[in-house]
Image 1 (spheres, rainbow, N blue to C red):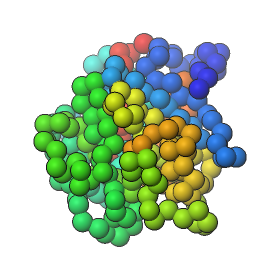
Image 2: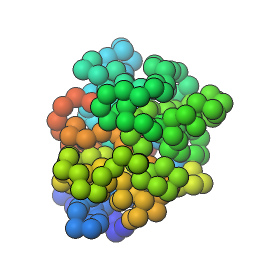
Image 3: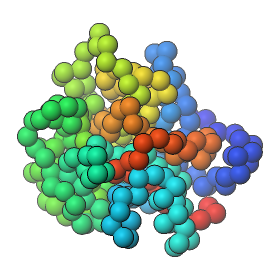
Image 4: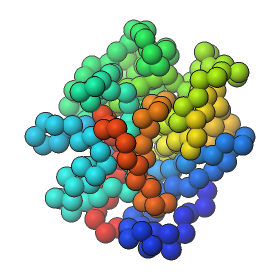
Amino acid sequence: MLRAPLVAALLIGWALPAAAVDCDRTDYEGRSYTICQVDAGQEDLALFLNNAGGAPYGSFKAVREALAQDGRDLAFAMNAGMYHEDRSPVGLYRENGKEARAVVSNPGPGNFGMLPNGVFCFGPGRAEVIETLAFNARPEGDCPNATQSGPMLVIDGDLHPRFLVDSTSRYIRNGVGTSDDGTTAWFAMSDLPVTFHEFGSLFRDRLGVRQALYFDGNVSRLYAPQIGRSDLGVRMGPIVGVVVSAGE
């Protein structure tokens, strides 16, 4: 992917956060997507749900304001999992080893319950998308940060079995896929409404990942200063981002 022109960042008054994240737009099968590639082996991935007072952040702006107090900033961020009206996670949420909600393994209503669903799991130097039952079989210490969502988009190189080529259900959708060695994560968001089949195919056939997870649709939001983007809209629940020192 080509990097966004430096002049664009200067015009909107944002400093580019070095090479922490590479974001750009790409076309695949006639549809446009924004993809942010993160070196999970080197960059500081983090989850955000509640501030120090226990209230949900809800926005990229609130996260940036909190980080600024410690001289840090966001290089990239995206909504990262489904949530209830009070912004609490629908499924597993674990931040820096502290679990706010336990994993949900049983089928249920909506996209989250369309099994198999999965977990985006990361710790120092590694990020993985793991199907929920496989995640349950692993030692808890393997995954200090985790957010559960569903459905899985790609499972062991195959699209979710319930995705239909001729589906008419289209939304702006976002999700994440990871490399087999855990060193790279691709966060993608459609620029226009797409089906599950189209979105899953982006990860499997364009990005070449064998494991990918759906985060959400319709409420999808992206913060990508490299391309001059900071989405507004409904308040979010879980947020994933890459943290850098302010001014990087």
